[in-house]
Length: 278
Image (cartoon, rainbow, N blue to C red; front, side):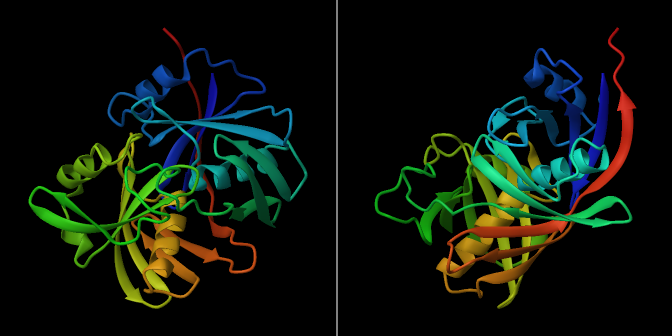
């Protein structure tokens, strides 16, 4: 089986062309290949598939084998993959995901995609739809006790659930210990991704993320989008900001007219490989 290792701002996945390759058990394959000591090493597995309604379809699996609805960084890499490999000549692509159709706009230089802007759609703020077990129309700066410490969470779905925490000194946080306690808290019926955000100024945020099913990753596109929305809801930033992640930067805008969130960032190919089944 041929595969391509790619990353978007350090959020790395293994990409498989589902037009030519047959993957019988993607959950098991993601667990095996994502292992950074005994496998290829990645945050998960992405299948690029035919779609009956769009140009392409994306399925993504976390490192623990669980399937996620959407990944912003992965969607940018899908755009680069299909263009660079000649599967399309379009520079605007409709991508079917588990969180609905996403529109990708490709920035091409010397025949290769360098950056991609993704229309991530409207943020979901109703707690029942995020989902988070909280009342009301929005969950903004709601106190949550973790290990005798109180955190204020703002919950947003960008097709997958996010709990955003604004705090200082995020470099010193022990996410290996703290992250799972958020992810698996009873407040979140489908677990949650958790973003820890430090406000640098009205247009710049610094972010670390604990991803549901993968642990701490270098970047999370949907998480960056959710964090910008949460920052606006809490009055911390304007509607457009730069998110500084461990793996790079993303530009996020929450458009006031359309209510859509747009994410712009890099997409990089790391290497090509072939899996030989023994």
